Structure formats: structure tokens, C-alpha cells
Length: 528
Image (cartoon, rainbow, N blue to C red; front, side, top):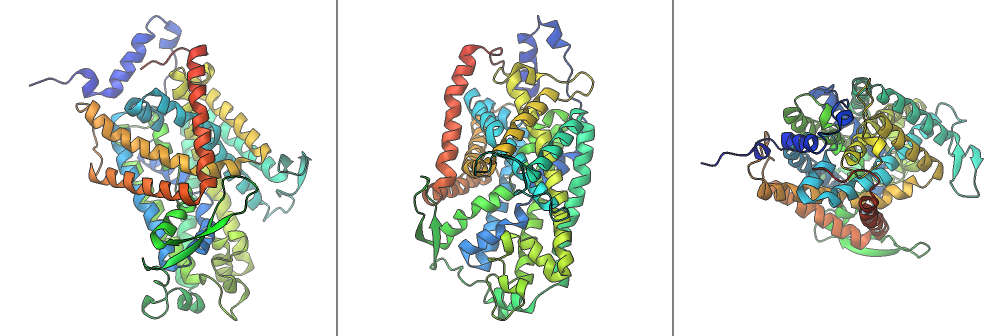
């Protein structure tokens, strides 16, 4: 009987020993501070949930419903997102328990598929995915704060360049303010940062539960008739596999006219995944902080499963509430808000329209307050976790050397946090973060697929590595994820090229950057 090697028994220990061996002559590095394991199961789960819940669930159902034109397909789209996300989270659980290292998904791609794949993920994360999301959610915070303080607006410019969106207005000034505040808080240590996350995640979950509760007290007869009818007959309207849907086909080249295409129900559901997947994204961020979670081999898989399960259940319930309170389209002779319906909610603020039905004019302010809580907590979670990826890249010699150091007192990657802060502030001022985020949705999905592929590769390459948790339903459910995500990707390539090709270009630009960075020796070569 063959005895497993130390590397096979515990890959995390092997990676650690390799790194220490490579640096054994550098006393200053050996004495460097280490991460503090300051997060338990509750904090890790709060990070999963808090990073997922931003402003999307309150807005994107309007655009999705315009494309689908069917209550059943709207719910089906969210159920597809839920299935993909939960399967992905359960699959990531094995990788997280097997390699509980700072950097998470970056490490999984590096170990499973090679250093360049890890770098391309980290490159795209820093360039747009993480920083662009922080910028977008931060500015959303500023805009909703304008409900209470009208002087805060994206149109109230303090400094403006030309006629575009470049410059400083009161909304992105607020965004930079909360970004600075949260960067300072997280620089003081993970315990304080996770405490802030726990408070705001709890508040935003209560806010979502409040929206769900509204469905029981503000049911609208016109909406019920329009969306459900007698015996749910209206609910299934337009959902047959033999029925067709007219969708707008986006154009990749600027200035060209969008066209329209006739597609089936399954394709239409895949097309709208741009909205629902983005609203459910960032669940993987907890893996970036693996080095700071107590008992990560148990708590990481659990937090992924619990966090994604609870949030996606709330998302599906919220969409049912929208259908119970508002008609899908418009109802002849109905009141002002109800008459608009989900598809025509003012500025796509579906949740606000629901609250207005329940509480009148005060409903808009209640919803604005809930979104302020949601976006503040979302910024904190994404900001906290993203810095750990750049730290891991620097440790491998693939990012600025100073970013790979921890503060001696707080044991936090302070330099990484402030580098992230600087680039995010520039995105806030550029006004381009919204377009950039649209571009990378496809890239995010591709990296999810590649990470699940890495799970299969590591099962073959490292069969004896200790796996405290094994992916639920392996190999069938992870394979199903790859099939579903690939299908959605192909559909987006065909019908939403403006969301796909630019994202691929952003990723591919990282290939020469990877080789130039290594060749120039800006930092020590990769240590594995």
C-alpha cells in the first residue's frame, strides 16, 4: 500500500513549505507578519451574502421582464441563476477546503490550470471586475442618498471634463468618501472589517425579508389577474417551448444599429442571465479571504452553501412579490404606479414601485434607505476580499512587490487595499465603470467555467490530496454546471456581443502583460 506524500496529504502545507524553502535565506521575509484568522462561520457566511446583495435585485427584473414577456420565464431565469450559482458554490467548496489560501479562486486556477490562468483572472479582477463593481455600487449609494439630500446627484458637477461623464460630481464624491472610509476601516484589521460586514449584511437581509413581507400585505387584484389569472393560467403565458420571443440583438461595434431576432424560450432565458447572474455574483469572494477564516476546511464550504442558498431563495421570493404587487406590463385604468407595471417601472426601480403601492410616497424613501444599507455592505465585502487576491499575486511575483506585505500591527494587506482604492477612485471619476462592468460579465462566467474544469483536472493530477469536503454530486453536478454555463456563454456571444467580445479583449490583453511582467523581473519569480 502506497503512503501519500506530505504534499498529497495536505497541499496547503506543501505549498507553504515550498514557499518557505524558497525564501529560507531571507530572514526579513520569514519574520513577516501572517494573516489573523479572525472570521468564523457567521462572518464568512455574512461575507458571501453581503457581497452578493447589492442593488441588482431591486432593479434588473424590469429589464429582464421586458425581454421575456412572461411571468413564468422571469421566475425560470432566476431559478436557472440559482441552480448554476449553488452548484458552482458546492463545487468551489472542495477547492476551498483543499487549498484554504489567501487569494481563493486565483489559487485554484493557478494550481489546476497553470500560473497564467491565475494571473489572467487576477488581472481582470483588478482592472474591472472587483474595482468596477466597487465603483458602480459606490456611485449607486450616492445616487440613492440623493433621495434624502437632493444636492447629491450624478448631474451636480463640481468638476467636469467636456460633455461626457468624466469628472467629479456629488454622487461619485460620496462614492469616493465611503470607499475611503471603508478602506481605512479594513486597514485596521479583518476583525473590524468583518464586524462591519456582519452588521450591514444582517440589516440588508432584514430589508429583503421586509420586501417579501410586503407581498402578503400589499397584494394587488390587478397584478394577480394579469400575472396569474385563474388557476395560474396567465403565469404560464408565453412560456411554452414552442413560443417565440423577439429580442434586441446588441451590436459590438459602436454606432451601428441594434437588430432584432426571434428566439425560443430557452434562448430568451439565457439572454437575460446578464442581469440575474450579475445580481448574484461575488459569492466566490469569501474564498479570497481563506487565510483569515477559522477552521477554513469546514467553514469555507459551509459558508458558500449557506450564503448562496439563503440569498437566492430571497431573490426568487422577491420576484414573486413583484408579480403579486405589480402587473408585468400595464393595466388599463389602473392607478399610476400599478399601471406602469414591472416592465415600465420608473428608472427600472421595481422594488421602489412595490413599496409605493404598500406605503405611498413614504415607500420610495423606505426603499432608498434599504438600498443604502445594501450597497454600503456590498462595497465593504467586495473591498475587503479583493485586496487578498492582489496580495496573493504579489506573493507569486506577479504584482507590485509592496502589495504582498501585511501590516505588522493589523496583519491586514494595507498596501493592497490602498492600491485598490486608488484605481477604483479613478474609475469613479472616469464614469466608464458601468460600461466596463457590462463588458466583463461574460469573462466572469468563463472564469467560473475554468475553475470548475480545474476541479476535474486536480482530481486527476492530485488524486491523493487531502479533501476534507468533496464536491456534492461530483462529477455530474459540476459537469452540469459547465454545460449550463457554456450554453449561456454561447447564447451571449451570439445575441449580446457588446457584453462578450470587449470582455474577452480585456482578458486577452493580460497575456502579453503576464509575460512582460515575468521577463522584466519587477518582482521575484513565481514561487510554488
